[in-house]
Length: 399
Image 1 (spheres, one colour):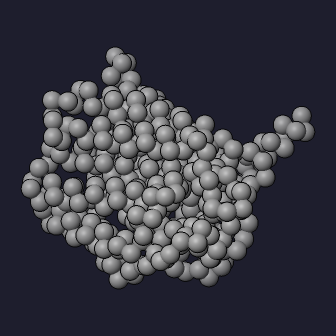
Image 2: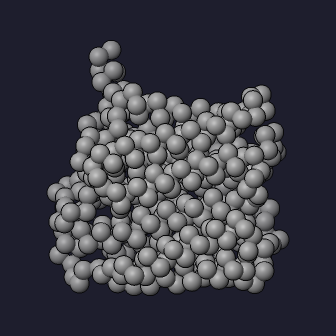
Image 3: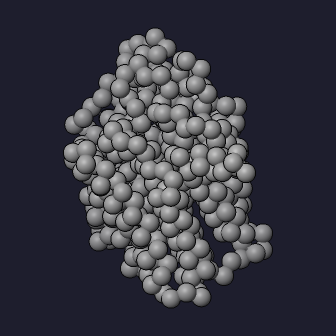
């Protein structure tokens, strides 16, 4: 009994354990319900419609758990304090789970409850982050609680229909977060890996293009909300160009030599390409392509970035650079195949009925395999820093 209690307490000893596991599990269940369930002749009867539920739960459910797991794991690097653990972490995870149950079974609940619970998770997460950030006087990091508050507002707004489908604006919010974090994390992890392995020259960063890209993306989100599609498309194209410029000195060719670093770089280029394609479609007034192109960002960039970051937590630490287990690369390959399959209707609309179930199957297989890969990170005393091995420089877990 004491051993079982010890295992349970260790599971709640680090945020990346319950919240990442919640994200991976929901990634499979969500798609198994829809669209895979519908393709198998089991169409779900969901409040607000299956498509709206699917979009909400992939962004605010799957994405929300992954964002929480990452930010709470990075938080000690900013605050110098212990990570959230034990009962508070269990309560936050329970709030996330309650929101998922309420949104899925909302037909039998008061109309305001699913939105309240979903918003409550993001607001509670924002308060936890803000408290630690303010205590450490790391004021620049307040951008993350502010971002979470935006997600907390957007979640019930999308559920209630105030934000119309497709869920472009909420998804672009996550794309903004990806760009914000990865534009620091990718070169930082790459520099650390290259120093540990004696490679040169080291990656260079371009702060001006990074700031420009983030401002352009933020402006594109705002214009998306006002439905100024042509103008937002121009901003998205400009943001993609700035993102590409930001990464020009990152030594991406050398990064191909390491699976974990390569995964970070490739997810960045999926983000850049997805934003560029979405911007071009808007400029060409090809609104019928938007739903497909959103999946290039959601699957190829955001989901793969979650795998790339979480994959570091489960990698072997042998005294040198981190080494992923044998399931890591196949899981990533399946994710990118899912993204490619989901884009097939762009050049070949007749393939819609085949492409969507194929992408769904590939997605579920990818996350099931990745969860098996991640199992070592769920037990034993947590190793810190979680996302880094030996540090040749002060990369830590922070973006």
